[in-house]
Image 1 (cartoon, one colour):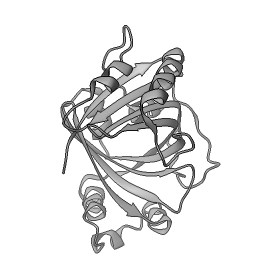
Image 2 (cartoon, helix red, strand yellow):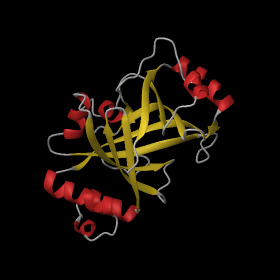
Image 3 (cartoon, one colour):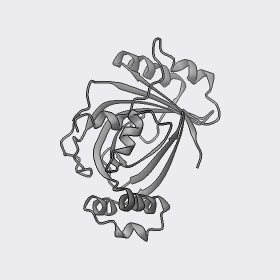
Image 4 (cartoon, helix red, strand yellow):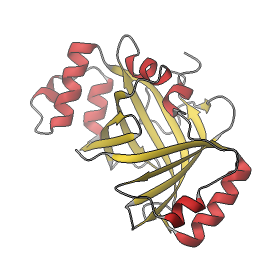
Length: 223
């Protein structure tokens, strides 16, 4: 399990246009999107005590959360993910999961997970059975993503963040979602051992500091 460095900034729309112009001239658009742009839809899990939510709000340095995610409403390629964080380092573990398996989880059919050959699916099973973990809400947003080979850098600009208002109708592209609070753009920068100066300089913005913004927490605002 390899941890990566992560910066996260809350910026405005003007910053977004400035950063996108800078990054377009020095970095590569993510090949999985159209000019690096795609829609991310996630279904986040939490336990009966909302531990993942409260640990984020309270700034607990070591925490984890589970989610199921797919892109541009393409249900042929869905991932179960666990994101772990220790201070400013993060790590993501991921396994492919089928649409049928997701539907089983949503319908409370989890016994198959115990015998699954994928460790992450079995881990989620134990969390469901022992900690009362269950789907909580849909989080959806548009992402502009850039990559830079030196340092294995990934820079993303996330906006149009929407919440499912507690809905777990995750696989229905027409389920109702609404904006999650005030419009905001989230700049995230992730890298391995070092962050090249050309990227470090490109993402610098006056009066913007590293923040602890959480799209999941923002989408639980109406709970």
